[in-house]
Image (cartoon, rainbow, N blue to C red; front, side, top):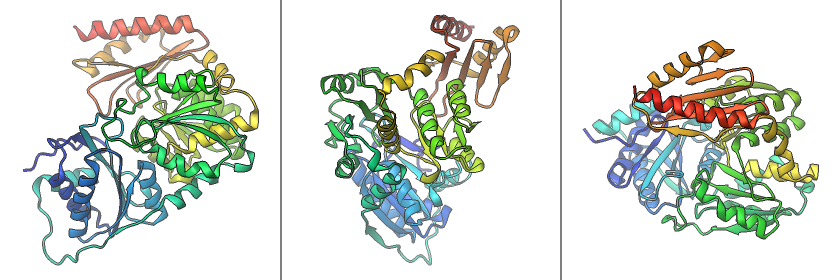
Amino acid sequence: MWPVSCFKTYDIRGTVPEQLNEELAWRIGRALCQVLSAKTVVIGHDIRLSSPALSAALAKGLTEGGTNVIDIGLCGTEQVYFSVFHLNADAGICITASHNPANYNGMKLVGKDAVPLNAQDELQQIKHLVASADFTQSGISPGVYQQQQTLPAYLQHLLTYIQVSQLKPLKVVMNAGHGGAGLVVNALAPLLPLQIIPLQFEPDGTFPTGVPNPLLVENRAVTSQAVLDHQADFGVAWDGDFDRCFFFDEQGQFIDGYYLVSLLAQALLSINPQQKIVHDPRLYWATQQSVAQSGGIAVLSQTGHVYMKEKMRAENALYGGEISAHHYFRDFAYCDNGTIPWLLVAQLLSQQSVPLSSMVKQLQQQFPCSDEINFKVKDATLVMQHIQQHYQAELLTLNLLDGLDLIFKDWRLSLRSSNTEPLLRLNIETRADRALLLQKISEVSTLITTFDQK
């Protein structure tokens, strides 16, 4: 049996070549053909040095399995999503490891209409076939491989989310982190009246300035300082495959993704009232208030793109947002996108003529929150049981949709096991009480450490 440790809960990811290599990529192509009976598959790849070779091997496996391949080349995950529904393909694969170190790579897979593969069914079947290599050998006519540029159509789709004529000549710092986001921004720039200050736009799979992950505090200083130096209206930074974007206000301050969910919900509901907005359970008091005030309906979902997209489709939701900076849009096949959010923010700033810091300040004061705090524990389930028991007497509401959601009079906590890493993740928010927030962060962190040692 071939080793398949690179298969994770929702996608494929591992070190190259130990866990993911050209042989495995070929097998994944052959297996996907067989499991999905796909006639046409879109493939694309990020800027990692190992991506072109893995892409070629994947294409070979797909065509030898009888599937036609449309290769859109160097791109972001969001462009694969778009190309799948734009070209009416049966599936799509983006070769990327997002924000993982340079020696990693992986694959994100979707089916028709860019719907995520079923992790317990389709992805497991592909995994077993890859391991066994029990591929159909007879009666297969090779598929056709072609390269196709879908970027022009993608740009036109992006522009449907805003009214370009309403945009003011805002000054925006943009940090691509040597990932691929600069390619799309450079193509969009001539179509917009914005003054863009580019940082680290040259794609470089060696990541000379560090792994593109703006959630790491040490990665934010360059963008923050550039916003101040250029007196920009706001700043944007991306992860490696740029399906997530992160914001800085005009003062160079990093804005938690939590508050962007409220801003984007308000912006979209102002145009499309009385629609449903899906949010994750880690932090949500600000979102629920903003959605209600904007005439929308807030809907809770489990954390993770598979669950968010499934809930959005079931509810026909206009928009979905996670605090991790994944933003999902109904008109984008319910998929996450790292370009639409900054276009919407630019339009919001142009319409309201107030700085971005002012837009989020009230939310930050009303609902101060922690950053997501990660703990390595021996038994996550046992620790969560202890936490629930400890706070049982003062608990107002208990929600077990996704780990622990404990709601009290003036604060709440979310504690859940990571879907992708051996970690326990903690989020806390309060009602307009920063001192209480700091107290509870210290208190709960100590309890987790203490319970883990028992």
